[in-house]
Length: 442
Image (tube, rainbow, N blue to C red; front, side):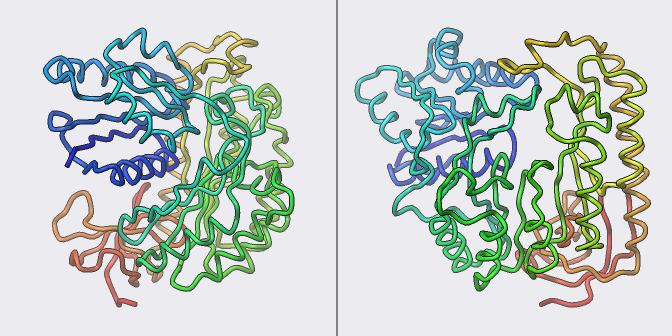
């Protein structure tokens, strides 16, 4: 049996794509290996949303060049967003590379590998497709990692945010058929999965470009009825498309977890306009207010970009203020970095000094740590339902899992609890996690 070494950069969507790659290549007789030195095929699945993604790719390829020199039969490929972005440039900078495949061409990988092996010729596939069939793998069972699983429901984005590279590397919005999604969720449930995370670049837009298809809220309602599934999550949402029906789903659907990731990016109307986000600060806050009216216990997380071109101290202060006003449970914050092809990289100079970006980022993270710590301390004494992921990072007889609101909880317990729902009484808290004591299993 041949061996596949697969390295993944980036988000949950890339992990889902990597699972597809592993599943497809397993059907071709490739078994996974955790060592590139032992591999017959090396695949690097990439992300280019943040800066320095390309450098990471070329650095990894540089490490593998010697392996190729020692074993000319070894095949090396690059997929994902950097492959879509760089294309033929990857071959020029890494002449020993065999395969380059874009974000919508994973289904072509088995044929590409065979052609590269037989003809010893480079293979490249970068086309975007307008039919969702490229997201389907006929006859292939989804890969299961414990009690949680990812399910892609759509790909691409029709927004024109000036800083975002996603439309250029993931294409336009395209939704999978709801029947295929529900069938996949049912298959996962039959194999012991308790929690599914629905994935898309803008899940709120699910079904909008497919005539006669369910809306996203309707899809959630269908999945909520799948026997065996206990929790449903999704990411990522665009605030402009947070519909009243989706907000109502948080009140009506039993399995929809009380957590929403809703990227605001900035608290300043002027910056939001330059970012082309399509909403104002007031409109964003109104959506949050409406959601909390329907689901008061909902936990919120968000994305923040500091140092966007032209961001003044007053505009940055608006971002700090929205953190105080919303009181997110968690945030993902970054300093702005220009991405190729984006409008911001063409229209605006990256005029905020790196030391200013770092200082602003530190202020954001420090403020959020205070908010998160205070909110977590308020959980002490409460009994939380936790889906156990496995052994905690520190070990020492500790297990770790997440609440329905996506809070991390560490507690004493045995490895046999992995994949189970347990009740934990919260006894301690920090900025990033909770600690507790096991009081019962379900």
